[in-house]
Each structure stands twice: as structure tokens, then as C-alpha cells.
Length: 303
Length: 301
Image (cartoon, rainbow over all chains, first blue to last red; front, side, top):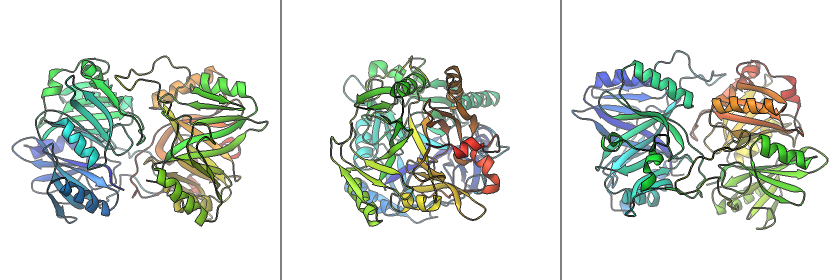
């Protein structure tokens, strides 16, 4: 019933070949399809056709993001609610939006992000057999995270987008960073009973802060950092601990300048869990618990 | 909608002082309440009243296990589903059970008493809700929360069918005997590899309940703590083929098997079921050893 989880993110890159090489060889995603101007990728453990689309464009940033809904009827239900909220929606048949795509309701959220609700994306299976599978496929390259975890976006009015996500899309607030003037600086929202599936922080409308792939543990974060350093990838912050979400993260940039994260940890959140609040004075520890300060680049650099 | 996750396991022990010492000092749970011949424990990150209830009894065993449902209406819906399946349902009012609002109890085809509960007394986690500090200096293993449990049943297929058809559990993995009958079935509601698993054995028995740890490093620390406290380790630290998790099995001082568990994966409701064949049972259960020890198969409470 309703939104299940983050399904995929589509980002813009000015050099499709370079970005594809980076996402397949350094990050270690699996390429599942390519068209003239797009490349489709997934984590090795993902059953669905793609969790990342690279789109050729003269710039960078996020083109669309998609959430998977549990039942086909959820598209009608949520589409109706979005329309009733005064936002136009457009329906696409399965396959219409490209290889593997499911039936989709598309709209532009109050944050300025083009957002899809998807049901029935093609299932291609993970990289393991369904009989007596090993825990991980051999011979994976790069960081090879099992799956996409969450996305972090920017917009001018975090209070407004948070109300939209909770009231219209039934997301639940797990944590918030409150500004001294009473506004929400950042909010963390979930559907999967985790610390977050999507988060928003104050910034330009429609901007992309990062997307995060899951890794199994802190040791994998260290190996990811080794991998990135070896490949000359620019590391932004970490490996470190987040105060908000209680997870461990490592931030870095793809060749186009889109921020990536690998993330692990966090907690289970019941639907009736009371949200955690961070005050502006403690924002440093909310974002980087060990460092206690947020560097300007983390707040100002986006795509 | 429907069942959310494992809420609590209620066991009986012959020595309450020893149980309290072990579950607080070695496991690192918080003793929330002691009422009459019962003691109630929770983990540091759990908000609900308890995830483990221990009752004094000359015999070691399991009284019941409880799952939490998402909405209040789910109790009515699942009550009629269980009754339609032909099982009597007992309704408990607020105050009938410690730390709980209304709940329903019934016997399952595997001979276990199961409880479903929605409203639970909130005691909160071991940290503040404003600018929380990570809890520090906790005793023992200190898992953040309970994760799953494994029960025995004579007819694994029939038992699992009830949990799936009536209670809405989804099958993630199954271990099939060469005679075509399932030896083990792993079921989930929380988009994890399992919340409840059923394996071959006597009806009504408990194989183990498991606490979540954050990672393999915490599993290693747990093994150190268990060894230091002379706790009898059953198997591990090792890896499961089924669920892909990392694990240690051990026994509390009264003989109830505990597990600490981490890892696994996140299945969607349309996840294709993984099948293990009997000739691979060793790797299915203990991926590194490739064989299952007799104690693991024969000891239950």
C-alpha cells in the first residue's frame, strides 16, 4: 500500500562515456541498457531494471527521481491526491519512458523536482541464482554496493516540501534540523521504516545534493574510501558518522560533479516513532557527528 | 497495514536472578519492569515497553511470541482472518497485559501461542529526542533492538501457510527436502530477509530469537563478550547462506538459544523466493562450515 521505497534517480552528465566508466568501474554498478543519450544502471543485488539513469546533457544535476509503489492502484490513489493538491500529473504506460520503465505518474513536486511514481518496472533479477545462491557474486569490480538507499535534495522552502511529502505522499518524518527562526533547515523522511528514504535541505529549488548507495558496514566504507582514493576520485567528506540518521557516510563526486554517498547503519523506525529534532546550534554534529562542524562546501556545492 | 514486525518474545526460566543478570549484564538489555514472577526487558534503541518477557517457571520454554501491527484496525481484520481459518481468538483489554493496550492471542497450526498487539506503552529509547548523543558506556553486547525469531514445527509447510495466507507474511527463502517437503521457510513483513522462520522440529518449540547488531565488527565484539562471560557458544561467528546474514548462536544460562545477527538484504514484496536444496543444507545454514552440527538441529526449548 502506497510508496514502497526510492526506485531510481536520473542525473544529468555532460560526458556520458566518462560517467558510465566511473559508475560501472569505480562505483561498480551494473549496466542494464543504453540508448543514444541515456545509460541505465543498477546495484548488483537489485531485482529491478535500474536504480540510476545517466542522461547526456550539457550540465549536471537531477533530471527526475522515482519512487516504487506497492500496488498498481496506488498510482491512481496518489495521482488523485497530487492533483487535488493543485499539481498537474501525467501518466505514462510501461516502457514509454525508456527501457525497463514501469507504469508511471509524473509530477513536479513543490521543491521543483520532477518526480515519478512507478509500478511494474521490469524485473531483471539480481546477480545471483535463485537456487543455493552464494551471498555475493564473485568478481565484482569497484565499490559494488548492493542497492540504492536514499536521495538528498535541496529546495527553498523545506517546511512546504516536508508537509507535501507527509500529507500527500504519506511519508513519515524521522528527524529535522530546526533553524533558530522556527523553520525547518533540513528534514529526513521515510517509507521503509529506515532513518530516511529522502531528505531535503535548504538551498536552490530543484537542486541535487546527493544520492546514496547502501554498503553493508563500516568496513565497506573504508574499502570504498581506498577505492575512491586509488581512482583519483574527489572525496568530499568522511568516512564519518552522521548525528542525524545515526548512519555512517562517505561523500564524493562523480566526474560531472554530482555528489554521491555510500551509506550504512541507521535504525528501524516504527510508524508511531516520535521524530528527533536537532537545533541549529548543533547542526554540525547533526550532519558530521565526529567533526562537529559542517564545511561550507557541503552546504553550498550541489548540482 | 497489517503486521509490522516482531514485538516481543515471552520465555520461562527456572532462575530469575540468573536471567536478570545475564540479560542485563551480558546481553546489555534494560530491565524495564518487574511484576510478580515476571521481568520485562528492552534494548537501548527500542521505544516500546519490552521486547523480551521472562517468567519464573521450573521449566525452560516459550510462553508465546508477539508481533506488532501497523494500525488499530488490523487487530479486527486479523482476528476475523484467524477465526475464519478455524482458530479461536482470545481478546485482551488494555491493562490485561503489562505495557500493552488491546491485543489478540491464538494458537497457530504449529502449536505456538501467538499474540498481535497494536498499542504499546512507550518508554522511549536511551537517548534524548532533541540533539541526541549516542548512548555510551553501555554494559554487555548492547544490541539496539530485537530482530527476528525461529520456531519449530512438525509440518513446516502447513505452519508457514498459516503465517502467509492468514497473517500476510511473505516467503523470502525455503529449504526443500529431497522428498519435496520444506525443511525450513523464512518469512518477512519488515522488508528484511526474515521476521519469523519455521524449521522442522517439535510443534510449539522455540529454536532461537535474535538481536540485531550494526555490523560484523559488532558481531566480533559480541563473541569476545560471550567468551569473557563463559557463555556457551553454539555456532559462530559465521555467515548464513539463507538470509546472507552474519551471526553467532549461543545459549542463555538457562538454555534458551539466543542469536546476534546482522546483514541480509531488503526484499520488496515482489521478491522472487530463493530455494535451497537439501544437498546444500550445510551451506544454507552455515555458509563457511558447510555443515550443520547436531546440537543446532536437536536443541530447542
